[in-house]
Length: 278
Figure 1: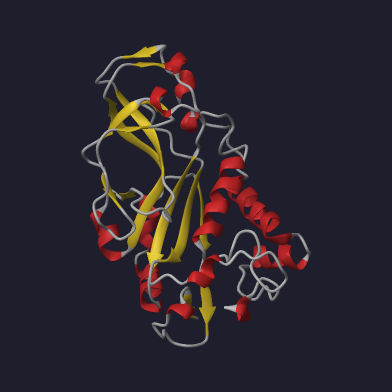
Figure 2 (figure 1 turned 180 degrees about the vertical axis):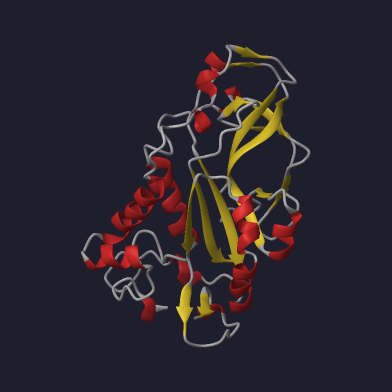
C-alpha cells in the first residue's frame, strides 16, 4: 500500500490531485469536493428540518420520519437495504444515513428532549417496509429505537446531496487503519480506504457543512455504502449504474471511490485489501 501513499497523489481523482499538489492537504481537498457538490443555485429547501418545526406534543402512534445514522465499521450496525431489490441483488448497496418513515411508540413532548440524554429522545418503530441489514447482509435489529431527529411524515422534499462511498467489503487488513502520525504512515485518519478515514469524512466534512447541517436539527443529505470485494465486483458497478441513479434522491450527487487502482490481478492476500485492477 505504500506505493500509493498520499505523497504521490497518483491515486486521487483530479480535484483531489490538484488540491494536494497545491499543498492544501486532504481535508482541504475533500472540502473542495463537498463545495462543488453542494454549490446549488436553488434556495435552501426544508428537506432536512426536523424537531424544531413539530407540534409541542405528538401522541403515540403518530406517523413521522426519523433520521437514521449508522457507522458501517461498527459491529452489527444497521444499514438500510434500498427499496429496489434489483439494486441490492446486483450490487452490495446499503444506506447508512437518511430519512425514513416510522411510528412513535410513545407520546413525545418536543420541549423535553435533551440531545445529551437518549432517554428523552423519541421512541420510534421503523416502517415494516424498511429492511435493516448489517454490512454482511445479515438481519439487523428492526425494533423500536431512540432517535435524535424526527420530522413530519408528509415531508417529501428530496435531500440536497446524495453521497456514495465505494468501499472495500472483502477481508479486512489491519494496515488500513494504521494511524501513526509520521511522514511514513497515514497519520491521524488512517488510509483513505479505511473505516476511520471515511467516518472522519462524514463527521468532520458532511456533518460540518453549513448547507447540509444548517442547525442542530437539520439533515439535508443521504449517505450510501457500495461494498466491493473484488475487481469483478467493481466492474459490475458500471452495469448497475442506471439502477444506482434511481436509488439516489439527492438534487446533487457525489461518489467517493475509496479503493486503490492497481496494475495486477486480485491475489486474495489480505495485505492487498482495497486494491482493484485498474
